[in-house]
Image 1 (cartoon, rainbow, N blue to C red):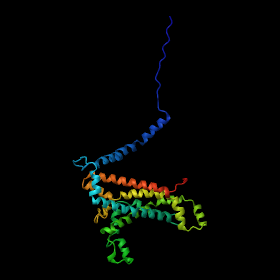
Image 2: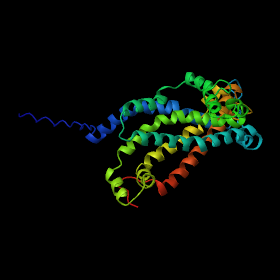
Image 3: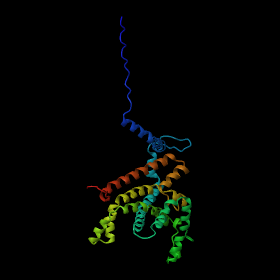
Image 4: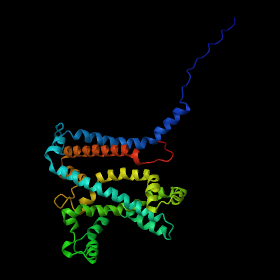
Length: 314
């Protein structure tokens, strides 16, 4: 009697990842540290701050829902809120354009074929390296009304002793003093403009010279349009930084005199960590974010009129 043949064994086919899926998996694994950090230290605190802005949270005990009371109180009952907003707008209006002009001027000078360029580049880059409270204390001496470097120079130039500015001691001169300080830091950003200037084709200048354009005309008609993306980048980041400017004011003046240097960021810090009104401070932070986003949106819209990208067709 013959034996029946064994039945075939059916094994399920193993469904593995194809090449594209494996590549995506490795991509997610590589960005996982950044993603976890973003969720834990950026998005999570932002959502908590948004919820807190609708409460009376004060760190210790209260965490009651108050709706939009914090926002209404800021706009209708808080005069220091408008004072801080005005001081910040004043600072951004003058510090950002002057900072861009300073960096661009230094880059233009360093772009010339003169000896000692490496030495001058090192000197002008020092402000990016020398930061901290020690530098701020040095500026406090520079602006000292009696023995400071600036008032001494003004006196030697013929300014009457009674007309010398009191700088940080005078509400009129306190913000200009901080703006002058900001130009020291802005000078270190010349590297951005210098890199852009190196990329401007020399033949465009030669064509402009043949057409009889003066150096000033060449600067506005050739240089500025070709480096406009860099100027636009510095404009956006500069305004964003100016809206968050406050640590220098905390160290040098603590917002005085007469709240003349009470910047928006400093007022948020005082409200949160001195008065412990976290809900109120969170509302201020979200208002600052909305203002910054609105200004950035306007800049992006206006950039279509004056920013020129290489190879762009309009």
